[in-house]
Length: 195
Ligand SMILES: [Fe+2]
Image 1 (cartoon, rainbow, N blue to C red):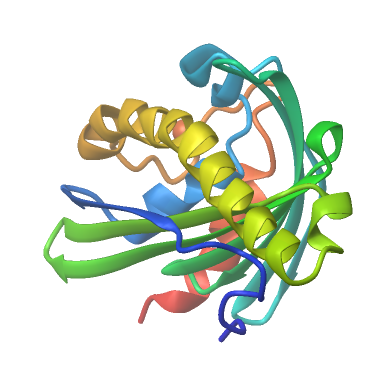
Image 2: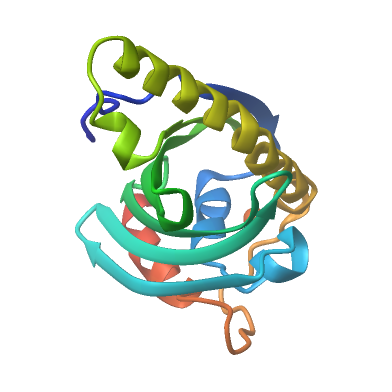
C-alpha cells in the first residue's frame, strides 16, 4: 500500500459516486490517453512510460489542460497502481512549481456495481514551501486555495467519464487506433486478478 499523504498538502477535496461499472474498466481510463483530447478537451496527452510488476503498475503520463484563471497547465503525472482498485498519482505542475497528490479508489459493491472515490490536493510553489512560522501557515493556506481553484475542473472531467463507464461494454480484443495508449498491455496485466 502507498504511504499516506505527504506533509505540506492541505486537506484534500473528495468526490464519491456509485457507478454501474467494473474497477478494471474505470482504471483503464488512465491508460486510454486517446480519449483525453476528444472527451476532456486536453491539449496534450501521452504515456511516457509504463511498467507492470506483479500486482503493481507504474506509469508516467504527460497532459496539458486549460484551467479557468490559471490558463493551460502541463501535468507530469507519476501513477502507481495497486491492483485495479487503487491508484495513487503524484503530479508535477512545472509552470506554477506546484505538486498534486491524488488517490483513486474503485470498490466493487455488487455485480456490475462499484463505488468510485477520489481525493486530491495541491501543494503551493516550491519557494513558498521553504517558509517557516507564519509564512508556512500562509503557504498552507495558499495550497488550500490552489486545491479549491483547480480541483473542481478535474472533478468536472471525471463526471464526463461517468456515462461512458456506466455503459461500457467489454470487448476482449478491441480495435485500437494510433494514440490510444497501452490498453492491450494493461488488460493482459489485469487478467491476473480474476479466478
Ligand atoms: Fe477520462
